[in-house]
Each structure stands twice: as C-alpha cells, then as structure tokens.
Image 1 (spheres, helix red, strand yellow):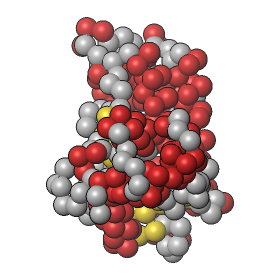
Image 2 (tube, one colour):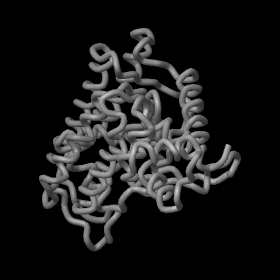
Image 3 (tube, helix red, strand yellow):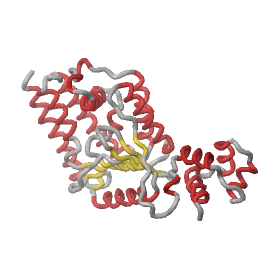
Image 4 (cartoon, helix red, strand yellow):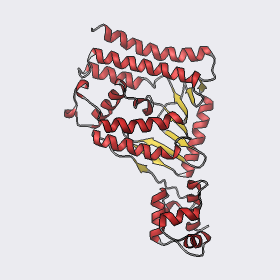
Length: 312
C-alpha cells in the first residue's frame, strides 16, 4: 500500500460515516470526479494537496509507513499569563470537541483532575492562581486576594467542563491525589500570601468536591472512580470514541503534548484498561471500601482545617 492509500485510509478512520469523496472535494476545493480519481488511484495527490490534508487531519506524512518509530505530537499553548491561559483553555476545547457529547475519558489523577477546577468557585481561582504563579517569575507573585480571573477564562472553562460532564469518565485515584492541592494551600498560607479565612474557605470547597464525587458514584451512570494502591499517577489522559483516540501527556505544570498516533493510543488504551482491572472500582465495591476511601480524604482536609482554625 503506497503512502497516498495510507493517507486516505487514515482520513477514513477520522471522518466516520461521512463520504470521503465529499470530504476531499470540500477540503481541496476540487470536483467530485477529481476526488474520485484520487481515491481510486487514477490520479496522484499533489504535494500541496497532501500537505493540506495532513495539516487538516493532523496526520504526519512522515509516519505513513509501518514501524517508523516516530511519534507525531502537537503541543498546547505555553502559559505565563491570563491571556495565554484563555488561549490554552480554548485550544483544549478544540482538542476535545470531537468527543462531545459521546466520548470516554481515562484520567490518571496525580492531582485533582483539571476538569474539577473549572466551576468558578474559590478553589477554581486558587488552582489557576497556583499554576500561574509557578509559571511566572518569582517577583511577579502576588497575594491570593489580589488575583482575579478574567471573564474570557471563565467562559472558555465552562465549555471544557461541559465536555467532561457529558462524557463517560474513568478516574484512577490513589491516596496522594489530594495531597498536591493540600500542600499548595499550606505553602501559600505559610508564605503569608493566603489568609486563614481564605485557606478555610478553600478547604470547604475541597471537602465539597469530595462529597460531590461520592454522590456521583450513586447518581451518575457515566462516572467511575477507581482506587489504586500501588500505581503512581501522572495526570495522563486518554480520550476515545468509536473512531478516534487522543492521548494527552503533561510536560510542564499544565501544558501538554497530544497525539493521535494509532499504535501509541492503542497501547495507552490497553495500559489504562489493565490498570482498571488492578484497581478497586468504588462504584461496585462494598460499602466498607467506599466509606474508608472517602473517610481518608476527609481526615486529611479536617487536619488542615483544625490547623487554620487554631490561628483565628
């Protein structure tokens, strides 16, 4: 099979039930007959046409042969400001739009999943405050009460949150998943950039999040939470539907690489599904296992609540 055939085969996988003739006619601005000649092999795609299709469908031409050992990735917008943060969220929406409203997420939760930091409460503001502070120069850090999110970020965040809410979700947690957020709250409290009353409100939001997740196990048929005692999480996210998979791999604080490489995403899908088998699904676990898991999360939050209350 030549590279033109491999390219057209890859496009077929991405367009689902749409006509390949119609797709080529539309994207390349050619007639139906011209599209048919290219599909049947009677005519060759020009270099410009091949590049246009490659860019449109994110199919690297240098990988259109087997066992290349190469991996094509796209990287997200780098973030050092709120303007770039808005662009970052907008790009994430674009990367996930193909999976809305029917997609399946597999989330290895080293930290509380990004999608829980989009709701507009104080915890949302704090997580983005932390990430922007860590990505900015140290002298640019400001107190938490001086930090505000722009309306454009909130608007884009709602779109991203809706995609996750509609999808089927499999989250892998362990006992350290909440730790990053708790340590961040304590760090900024000890640094004097976060006041006692603000820290307590953040802990209340975090406690509410834990309660909401516990409720989802009982009320929502598209949400599954797994507890893994041994696996170290890495915040990788695999998203798939009937015709497409994408793997998101973080490479800085929140920036990520995304690939649609078929072999890589297949291997990732197999890996995630094996880990789910090795984990305890809290949706179907006995009441004792579920109660113990959520009790441990509340105990961590309550320990810090007691600490900050003692300073009031």
